[in-house]
Length: 225
Image (cartoon, rainbow, N blue to C red):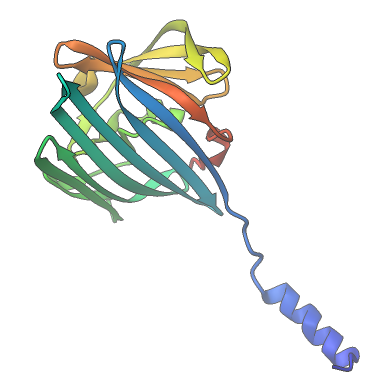
């Protein structure tokens, strides 16, 4: 094709009015799940960002075996879409040892419309979720339970610094106690605001999420309002 002044001007004009493609960024990490000192499962967390939108995919698989037989199983799969630090949609399903639960949420005027196995209704404001990955959630008094949609009141208290195992060694992490509706949960974030583990009561024993595989930093993918 022969290039002339008209062609060049048309191309320049198109470049001005064509939206710039936003390159997506993504990160993933894997946690091993322990009950006391026995590994019982894993969680995969994948976070991706394109423009102002952040997508979070969670998959949890737990299988407790006694004498070679399955005594308890748990599987959760969820997807969240955030925009400008606000949850836009949530879709999650859970099989809790044969008991099937779900949580769906959609942003509407006035808050989040929740339809879940444990709650149906409007939750006002800008809640976090029980995916824990964004440290910004610690500043939000209400979280949505991704297993059943239940809104949970979660005051948080910072209680100190601990050393936690991570791939390749250990890391100093700030420990936060969750009170209210999650009063047995402890969350750990390193000095770069990265979620590096948690622990909680599980049928009379302590369960732990231990970081097993760490990709790129996730906190820079978070877009807060």
